[in-house]
Length: 141
Image 1 (spheres, rainbow, N blue to C red):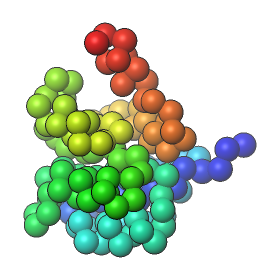
Image 2: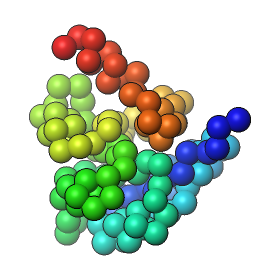
Image 3: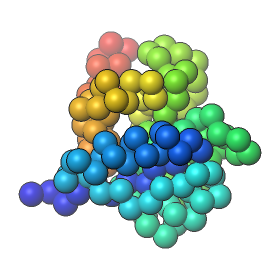
């Protein structure tokens, strides 16, 4: 059996952090190794834990997710899944996040409804696989 994907969750919203944590704790193939409320905490945690994957909220007070993404890519590149309610196929923010090094983007509003897809995405990205969604995009391109 593959070892669980180690993940750091970064979101300024307590509700979202708790929701993601609860969702992921149900799956033994994923292990939440850190939860951060902001960019500073996130960068410290990533340095410390060296996670397989990070979920990162795009809209946060102070340093936004894009700035943190840039720092992660400069510092300790690891796969990052950007979360935002603005993320849709073809949205400029999705393209920008991917250009800046994100492994994938996921619509925050869909996490509960699409829980299975969300967890699958985390596992694929954490194991270094190209997410199915991106494969579809790559094929279409």
